[in-house]
Image (cartoon, rainbow, N blue to C red; front, side, top):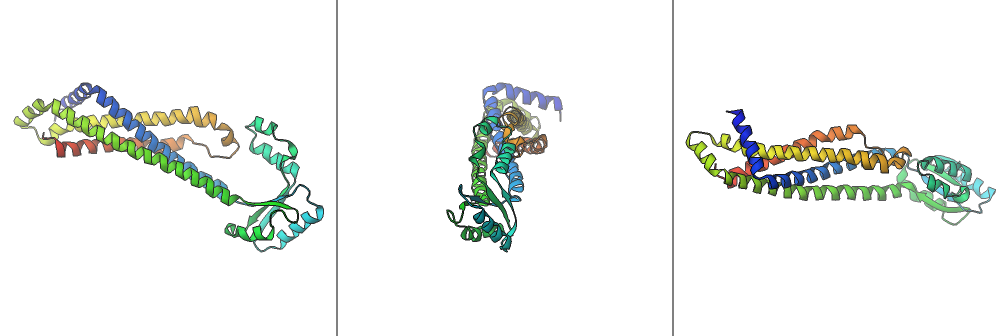
Length: 294
């Protein structure tokens, strides 16, 4: 097999259908970029679950006018409860100090929050976090110095449900874009085969195999898929540098959300490249087998 001939045929095919090739590359890049974004979001969700679910607590916020006797009664009840694994008391100064540490990268928020805005509280770790209703019944809101009992696990469930929805929506859009890219690849290959039907007919007459005449078209699609994958990877790199590392630097440094490191991008890059090349090549091969006689 003459490698130079195959390469020249691939270059010729890409030049002849330049506009469709560019459209195919861009569509592939968008779909693969969305797929990569979905994978990164899934990794972030997994990391956030490890960070937060290990620290799930029940917060018992005390009323503004809570007395020392009421505070002592709450502490005694927590100490004697078999549902409580451990607890700590946090006064207003300690709550404000923790707030400053958590939002140290957002000075405007800290400056606009007065020191007495955060209530004193008991932060309770349960033996079984699913037994939160028992604690809520023991310390009803608005009674005996208790202002509100809040289950942080419930908030996390809603948060992760929202993040999972964003991930699923991103992947769904990526699938739709991938289908559009596959259809565009199929149409491009059909058009390229039609434009070169005389050349391929002559090649078959002089003894070239079907695989030999099909290979340039498959390589065209695979090359376009590879370029699209490289553009998608480049888009993820730019998103990390320009958006994640800059816009989200505050929450990341505060430990609110996990960072997106280069290792994660390096891990999914081969997946993106393989998907781009593989899907394009398979789409081209199937098209040639079903719709084109070479």
